[in-house]
Image (cartoon, rainbow, N blue to C red; front, side, top):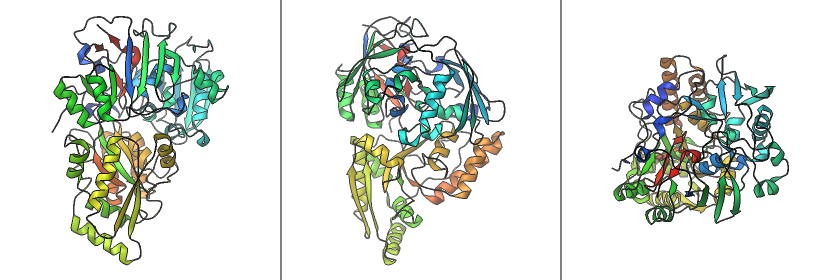
Length: 525
C-alpha cells in the first residue's frame, strides 16, 4: 500500500499536546516547513505561483469559504491572513495576527489579543471590533456559513480595548481554538467592505492578508497580487498568486506533472501514489478518523438503526478502495490510529453479508424496504464511491440505491439542512474534540447524521472538559464504542489532506487540516 514519501509529523504527539487548557505562542512553525525547501537557501522574492483548488467559491466573503484542504484554504489565507495557526508536531497554537487566545477558567471564556496597528487594505483598522463583527455574523444561520459549527459556541463577545476581544462560550470548551482554525473564523474581513453588500464585496474583497484581489473570472481563475503593506514584511515573497478550480483528480495531476500548475491541493490517495512514482514532491497531514458515507438518521430509511447496520455489514471496503483509489487508499480500521493517546482496539466496521441480507429482509417484511438516494459531490472520487456502493448493494434483495450528483454549493446547503439520505462527510481527528463533537453531538449544527444519543453526548461533553489524560481517554473510548453501536455511516477511507507541487516551489507550510500559507512560499527558476 502506498505511503507518501513526505509525511508531516505524526499525530500521537499532537493529540497528547492537545490536553493543555491554555494556548501557547510561538513565532514560527519550523516543523511544517517543506522538506523540498530545506536545501534551497534563503527565500527569493518575485514570481507567480499557479495554484489549484478543488472547490469553486460562491463568494469571496470569508463566510463562504472553508479552511480545509478540499475547499479554499490558499485563497482564504491569501486574502485575509491568519489570526493563528497550529504546529503540526504538537498542535500548540502559534500566533500570527493575534498574539494570544487563552483561557484561565477552563474554557468558559477566552481573551483574543491582536497585534497593534493592523490595518485592512482599505486603510480601516483590523481591531477587536472588526473581529467581533466578523464572528457575530458567522453565528447567523441565514448566512449559510460552514463556520457556524464553531461560531455557534460563542454565546457573547465584548470589546475590552482596541486589541482585545473577550468571548464567553455557551458551554466550556478549553479546546475551542483548535476547532476555530479549520473555519473562516480565522479570516477577518473589513466590516466596512462587507457592509457594502455581497456583489460589491466580490468585486473588491478587503482583508489584511498577504495578497489582494486583482481579477476574478468565475469558472476560470482568481488572480491576486502582493499586498505591499502586509504586516509580516518582507513576506509574501511572491509577486502574484493565481488560483484555479479543478475538480477532476487526473486533470490536477496532469497540470502539475506537465508544468501547467505549480501547486495543487490534493485529496486522492491514487494521485499521491502517482506523484510519488513520478518523484513529484508532496506533503500529507496525518490524521485519525476519515471520510464517512453518512446516513441521515433523522428520516427513513436510516431512522432505523437496523438499516444503517445492514449497509455497514454489506459494504465491501476493500473492493470500494480498489474501485475508487486503485487500491492505494487507507481504510480506517479504528477511530484513532495506534500510537494515539486515544487509540482503542474497537473496529469501526465488520463485513457480514449474510447478516446484512437478514436485516434487509426483516425490514422489508415490516413494510420498510431500504430505498435511498446517495447524494454525491461532483468529483471523480465521490461519484466513484457512490456508484461502487450502489453496485455492491445491487447484489442484495430488498435494497435500492439511486445516485444523485449535486454541485458543491447545493450539496453543502442540503447537508447542513439534513435534506439527504446519504452523503459523504468526515470526522477527521487531530484534537478529537472538534471533529467528534461537531460531527456527532446532538447539539451540534454540524451533526449531519442527525444522531442525538444521550450516552454519546455525555461522553463527548466529558472528553471536552476533562482535565486529566486518563479521564479524557476514558471518555473517548466510551464515545468510540457508542459510535460503533449507532452506526452513523460507513467509514470508508482515511483522509489525505495534502498538496503536491513542483520542485521549484519552496516554503510549503501547512497547518490544521491541510491549509497552506501562501506568504511562506517562494520560487526558484
